[in-house]
Length: 104
Image (cartoon, rainbow, N blue to C red; front, side, top):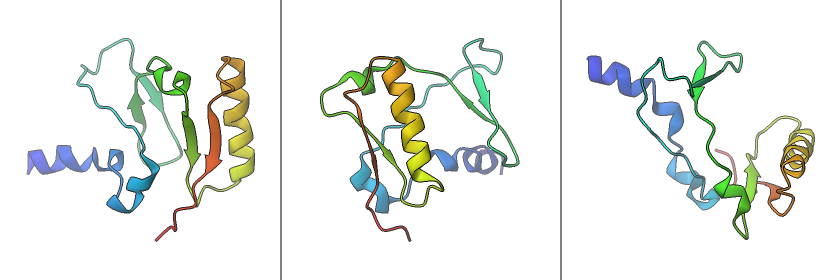
């Protein structure tokens, strides 16, 4: 039961196989809860999500792109915001596009 409870808290980190064409990158690393590099993001859900910012290696590679999901509300606004953030870091060569994958 304890293992099931722990795993259920991580399920949001995994995407359904239907989205494999998006080639999304997600990484995992075990850290203690007191680690000073942990940051907290509350997106209006029931709980906050912990994360660590990584180096920008994904944005600097030729052909890198950010794919905004097919059901994201206000996608054009979100994409403009991402482009702006990338440009401020001199990563303008990273494309920002909206997914064309059919949402189930």
